[in-house]
Length: 141
Image (tube, rainbow, N blue to C red; front, side, top):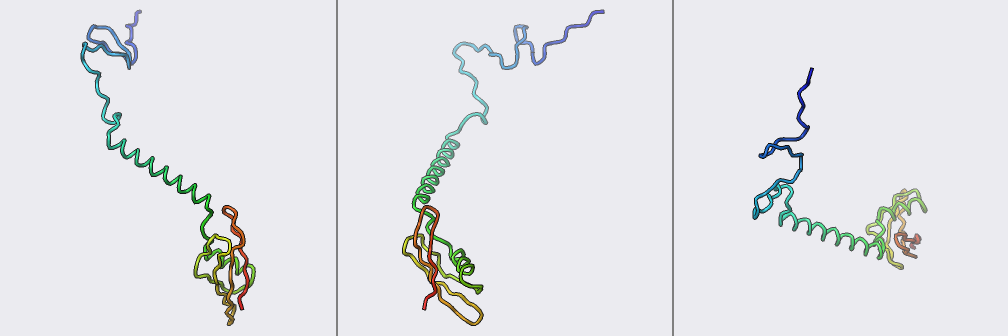
């Protein structure tokens, strides 16, 4: 018993009666330009422009981020200073109206409410090393 021959997978007969595989080059008449890629494979000028703008924005963000790292953190938040005052000095409620600039010698005044007493406290920056800001806390008056 003889079985008929099965066609090769992924092949189809071409115009000359032979078979060509998937992705095999096709013959073109001389002088005919190659076929255009589908629209989703062609970069458009708008896409290229958007990609360039995104790359530029990312580069500027990296540059600004690098500069701010070199200059230090900028400030210590008022909440962080108030929390440090509460943990070091008292069990009362400390509030600081402003952030503490990360500059040696910079200072801010804070208020501590401890029961019926109100105490004024000053936080003064003593050293700045990268992102580490050291400050002294002392009561005023």
